[in-house]
Image 1 (cartoon, rainbow, N blue to C red):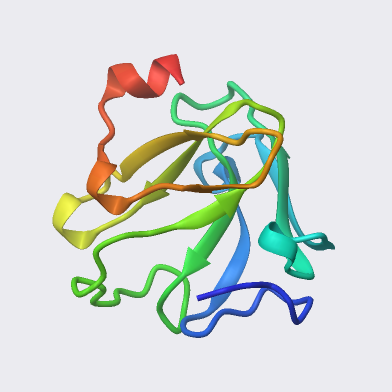
Image 2: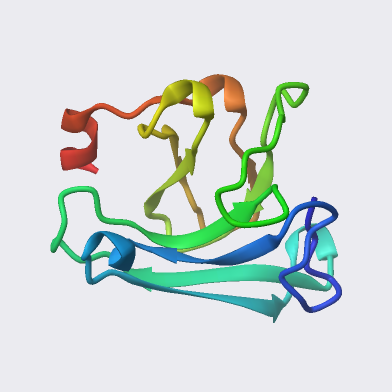
Length: 139
C-alpha cells in the first residue's frame, strides 16, 4: 500500500496519508507526519509520526491517517482484506491503531502495539476489537 520510498505520502490506492488529530473534536492534540531516510529492512525511506496527546477531550488522538477511498472518510469495501501489517520502530512506548468500519458505527476497532527501538513487524486485523470507554481512559 505504501513504502514511502518515493519521498511522498502517496499510496498505491486511495487518497494516501495525512495528519489526524482531535482538533475537529475541540481537542488540543497535534501530530506531524514526515517521510524520512532509513526504512525497515534496509529500505530507503519510512514514515515518521510525531505528536502530543492533550487531555482536553476524553478520546484524544494524534497521528497519521490512511484514507483508502478517493476522499477522506469516503467508504471503501475492504472486506476481502484480512490483515493490516506494518513495520514500526520507536521509543519503546505503546501506541494504538484505530480502524473505522461502517458496520461498527462510530466506535473504531483498536489494537495497541509497542514501538520498540528496533524495526519489527506489527499488527494483524484479527486482533482488533471495538474500543470500550474504560479502555480509552486507561490508554
